[in-house]
Image 1 (spheres, rainbow, N blue to C red):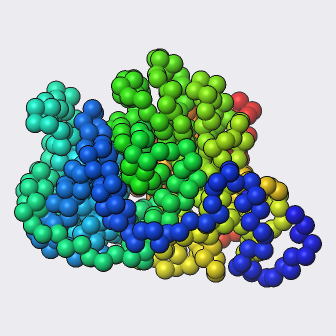
Image 2 (image 1 turned 180 degrees about the vertical axis):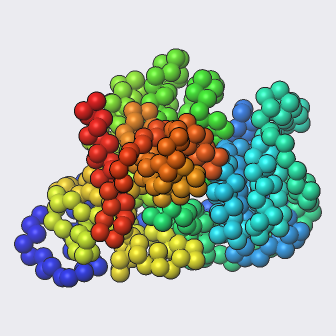
Image 3 (image 1 turned 120 degrees about the vertical axis):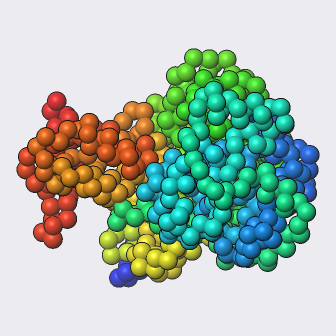
Length: 578
């Protein structure tokens, strides 16, 4: 494609590049999707429940919940929120659970009541949880009892009015429920002691809600469905406002891309990535609900032998995950004993898929491990590689239907093909903005609806997008974002630290790990002591794996900002020399 006729305008906000990727779409893939098919995610739920009735919608630990049961239970929970708690449209409710059957019940019940869902990582420390609850203004939280001790510590400092607790086996048949809950609490000792005087049991809320009438408010594409929290350059997590329209669009975009391989009401999708992660939320829960699939929820994906044992029980047709999970599976005993004859689709997201992992996956299972790309702010999917890919390309794929990608320079101007710049994205899946943060919203957006991803990359002549680097200093550990400022802020709380810089270091297992470079105030400070301090205030994946000390001040810009890239380059140079 010739770029000669293009007139370059200062601070241009409209892409001047034709949608060159459309010519390389897989056969039958539409250029655009029609989000008006559904007014909201509640419409998606109700239509699937009507169409697929007694088919299994979700399975966990061998217990299935049908679409009909999902409809009844979510309706009851929504009625409880309205009638007992007095929830009104737009009120926020937090969900703090791993992948269990209760998750979709609570999530869809909240949406049916017109509430906004705040997804919370159950592994958050009290400091992290307190910020998210305060910032979102959540009125209630539903938490798996295993993590209730953290909620008990911070709830009085927030606007939480009601804590709702549940145990792992609460939605299992009576005998299995009793056994599972007893084993979790008294045999494996997985429930730290907690006390919340006013807490109520989720099972009681469902019983209460069954006798109440749910009045579902009118929802539109503009209503906020989720506050999905992501970090920032300031180190303060901020809530991306994802609307019903954003998520309806993205599930339809993903469906248009993969739909040629799927059969309604006949798929089984394995969901090891937690539903509080935006990739799993959209790609697994919402998209496959739309297809009437059985979504197999894996509560503890770190238990690889347990995951393989679960996979041996069924003929699954699709699986998503992050590179670290696929790598662990490929190197686990018994992986070649799986019946993968029905497997149609394997998608890696959340972090870069490594070539060695993708090639070994295709060798073992005979289908490609597709890499996709997206961000919390894009609901999340923006690009995916074609399903008919014959080999690993190292690229993040083509922009999906109704999505445009433009590579921009610092001034916001589009750059020629093959030139590296910032990846900018426009489409119906782009967030409404950041919750109560207009300045950060304005900073993240270019005029015309373009979202600035913070990732650097280029586009080739076929429209394939490649990520070359991150403009931001974000670190990605096994698909989870770690923002250096947050780690540095926690390190600064230690009296022995003068200054520090958190950097990402390549790791064959997790993609990256967090390393902390420190200038000591106290010469007696040890790496072990500082790591233990960080562990008290940060979720495990954010805790530095390695701490190194230096005797000279950290390199800084003329205005005093620590130059993390220089620190990172110095660390890489030292590693290469070693």
